[in-house]
Image (cartoon, rainbow, N blue to C red; front, side, top):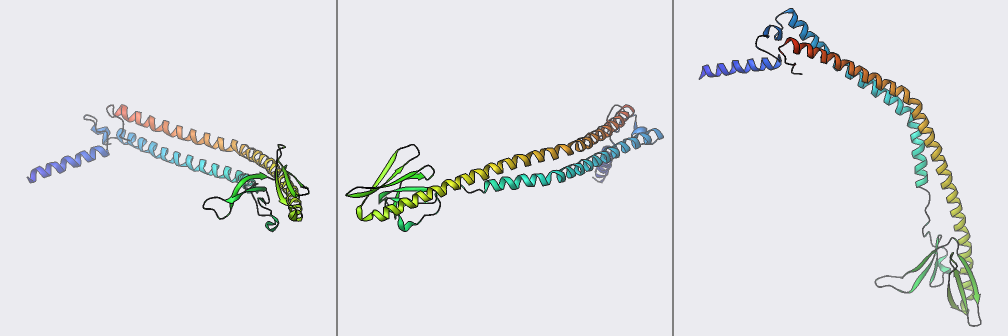
Length: 263
């Protein structure tokens, strides 16, 4: 049993040594195990080629990383400017409903807000604390008129498409109706001015973003030749190192019985 163990250990050690010194070809042991000057020179050439390849790849990676860092630093301020302008545009106020405008002067079913005029339902919907919205009219382009007859007063709202909607009130609400019409007219003017300023600012930001993007592209292109030159030099360095290693491996293959080295 002890003899078997010894044999297995010897065989295992021999196999491990063979793997480490691969290839070991019968009849080429003098070359493979570097017993002679020819074998030592070939193994040294192969080892040098492997080291040169590692060094070449490392230098190529460092040079490319450094070039890309310089290029990124060159364009970073321009990218930042584009992002800031895009954020400013995204932060522009959006037309919506806005805050309530003088709610104490509202007359049902009309409710006036900064951006819209609401027509509410006469009764609260199921489960609601207050009436629901029957119609929502953006203020831009709205026309509103106050009128009266012997029996009542009315508020007529004309939509931008020319269609109208009229609400009637008792004569004792004449002053309140007139005040609400005045509020609506004033708010229409404010809202239309808001839209004009918003559209002007948006157009201004769009133009600034285009200029900033053009500056970014120009800065990127200005640094591109240096980056491309360094990348090409890195590719050449890698290709040369790969060629040297292939030549060393081919030399080993020719001298070591037709087998390539294991790495």
